[in-house]
Length: 309
Image (cartoon, rainbow, N blue to C red):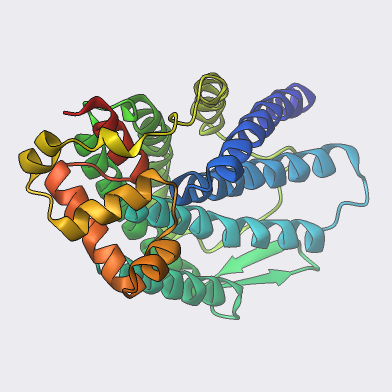
């Protein structure tokens, strides 16, 4: 039974690798921060699955698999789990045009480092190698509470963003990610009381089945199909920024200049240099433009300009 489970996990990981490869290709090609951040979070969860499969394989097939090796791999998992949640938060924060997103990102990154430190400290998780037991202390319980709270915040950001993109072509992409994340959140809620009561654990042969692998695999198949049909918007001509479009959204002359630079494919730094303004000013103007037009990214802006709506 353990070998069948390992074979299943390997198939799931192969699906994940295929999705990562094609998503990474578009992230590099488009240089979109959102795609890059998504690739990072999906890669981190793939790594969690890979570690889980490695633990199962070693426990089933390697007689010399020691408690110390099991403890090390479990520690890697304890580092990756909060890293995934912070990556999700960074991804969704990047889709919101709010000035405080860097501060929020810094807070969660700092909290993640503290929690990882607590887990790996003597008050977190310690190994009794002689008896093959890991003992958990207050540091572990603090990290468990933080994990649930940060996961809740990440989902709230995600569903808020879903409302904003419901009538766009991003809906299926975001909805799929949220369904996958919600399934994992359900697992976290179910295991939360047990995790708070947990005082020690011993290695088990094979390991538990990771139910999150099911929506992960389904979402991976969706991603492969999604990115196989993905395309970069065709270049726009400068004459496609009509007066009616400008007047409809109340675009100022300076905002018009910035939109034209975006159409030309200029980065924020290029725009700042060519218009002799600060990078912060460019970001402020883009934020105002997005708010006026009701979009969340450059590609949505270009799509709206192209449609003339």
